[in-house]
Length: 245
View (cartoon, rainbow, N blue to C red):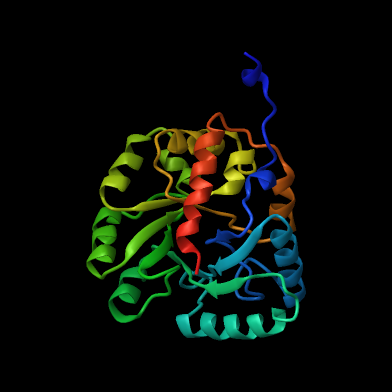
């Protein structure tokens, strides 16, 4: 009975030493994340203190919103690493991208070498308003092109809230899931936390990420986890060891 009343842990206390974060927006001035090199340095020092030592940052590639390119991201990464090298706030720092599945995505897939998190693992996201009409066909084409799609923050797509079986369909299509850690502390609302709990309980989460954009996100790591399935969350966090360089 005593375990039932045990206090929930702080999210930051669940982050293991040498953790690999596979989703963040730390390259300065390139999207809606870090605004400056000073921001980036400050965020990474704080994240490192929580145990995050390896970073695979993922700028948005979203046509007509964040028109980043693979070459531009790679160049910005090298400049940023050079500036940060004196700060000793990371063990490794690399970049993939977070690709919006929009009307231009298929052209990118057909004509460009996409930036992956590791090997052929590709981070993608959808509009929060509605899923692409041909989502499953697109996921099939992604895999046909040799990539393994990882859907960023599946718990945040509210159009699936009352259609939880759609998550099973996505998993069966070969799509991996990356949970946003802040979803576990009610940062985005109790409904999203409830969906995160469902996905963890049903062992659908493959990896996790911070999705850090700004200081408020970092501050939220000092909140208590609100989920029932804390053990499943810890298991999901440890799966990120796969991305150790």
